[in-house]
Image (cartoon, rainbow, N blue to C red; front, side):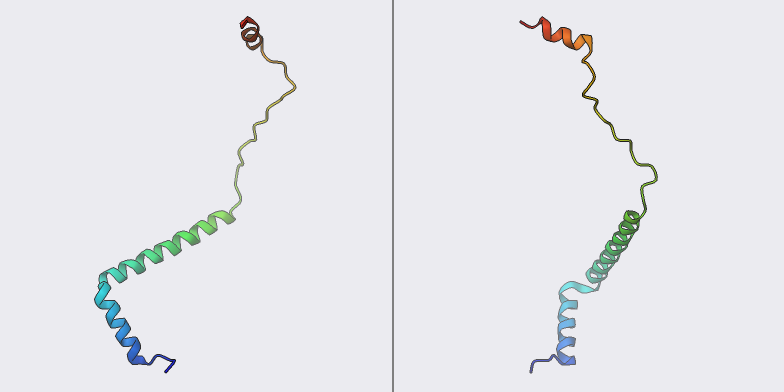
Amino acid sequence: MGSLSIWHWIVVIAIVLLLFGRGKISDLMGDVAQGIKAFKKGMQDDEKPAEKPEPVKTIDHGTQPSAARSDVGSKVG
């Protein structure tokens, strides 16, 4: 009573085919296959190290502000 016989599976498959049709199921399987391929390609791309990393821009806080900058502040007031 707890297990499904072959007749149960045949009825379930027949109902699924009637509801969705062969075209929709094959389209769905094609989309799933494309998703798996894209996932595998993405995983391979992640494993490759970056060939040339971008340089890190640093800000030097020890430099003096330019003369034009200091003139703007002193003219106010």
